[in-house]
Image 1 (cartoon, rainbow, N blue to C red):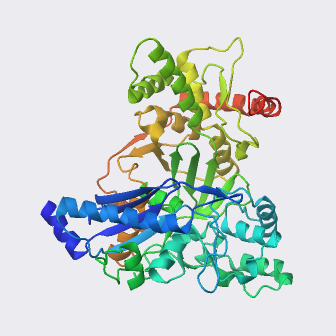
Image 2 (cartoon, helix red, strand yellow; image 1 turned 90 degrees about the vertical axis):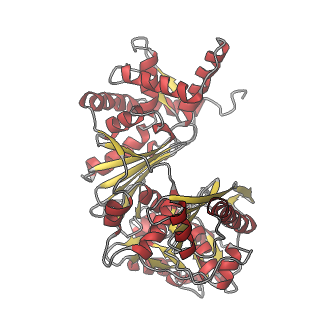
Image 3 (cartoon, rainbow, N blue to C red; image 1 turned 90 degrees about the horizontal axis):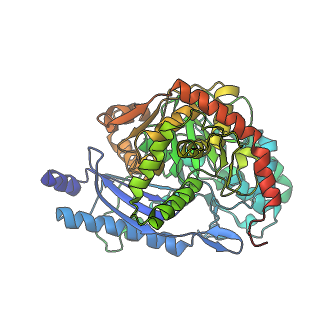
Length: 537
């Protein structure tokens, strides 16, 4: 088999995906069976500079080269081949944010990432103007806030893009963006598969009095859909990616995408009426919609799949942090008793206790709010656990309550989709560390959302793998083959998954828990109002 892979590498029958995540840049090389044959990575951290969260250009370039070099070295070590070409390449990165360049290609202000909460006035004004939810992290909110702030760089603007768009431009010379990433810069018109023309005009009219020498459409990258070629690796691009000079120019590049899009691809969740839920420090669900929503909801971000279908995204700031903190406490107790705690076993034992609990968690209540929660209108974090004298305070109920609470804010947003907008959901694929313990997390999410929840063996592959799949799709798809069919019939054809359907008693129990959760938000607000962030104050 190694000989076959060796030949495939030499012939360029491979695809490379590189994703710039918030803490790691990862490169993944896959073969024609979509299996990872080599990878490399680079750890990095954002910096707070002059009040803005940013990554500097030197780190971006170094991380790109390091991740590629490590992957290339693994190819040499495992297969004895010096990597000189690949079949196709794709870049992805954290969505949104603001990278602004002048006519000389110089960065005008440091890269402003999605994490900056500095655009509140702009986001609010644009949401009202467009009658379309513009979150603070969107690129257009960053641009308009710079205009409101009368920043000196704005008249000099020639090009505004995302991190993925910037990398792609560096390596191809083409100012391009995949439609999914573009949908986090500016609203997309699904029918036109492009930026919303009416809203572009509204924006230009809004700033007409400023006398800027540009129109918004001229600043934004060209929109491409999955499957299209969005450029080719230039000589300079090949030299930047692989300074050794081994890599050949001319390799086709697919449209650069955002991390939301690569997550959808990696979980086979681009077909309408499907979705995925990503669980970690925060939790977000993305549901592929059959039609646009009838109203504007601040709880719902509207983005698209990499092939342009509308997606409703519900993002809650808090999920697993409070559970992890409690598990740390239980670990302390266990070790104080003279025992040695294995982390995986500890989580497994404690999570499985939740299956023995009362369906509603026995009247207990918790809020795992380490930070504020936009969906429920709580501005600051105050983790809270509450019970009445009549609550059934058992370990099983305690664990179920905290697992239920991890999805409480998400449920509020999802109810807007399913109840107010009658969005139909056939299935949701879940991924994240909470699902390492089999069954338990799936049962809790299935109860919360009342939808079958699946966990697939590929769910841990991540966004760089998803980006490599998009690169492979561009070069290997059959004529007119849609992305959802390509994923279903080729990439995930033999992938095993475990589906858990909602249990009626669990669903009813979660409903009772949510009644308590909504009523108890006043308690959480009181904690914010009366409990200082620093306990010594």
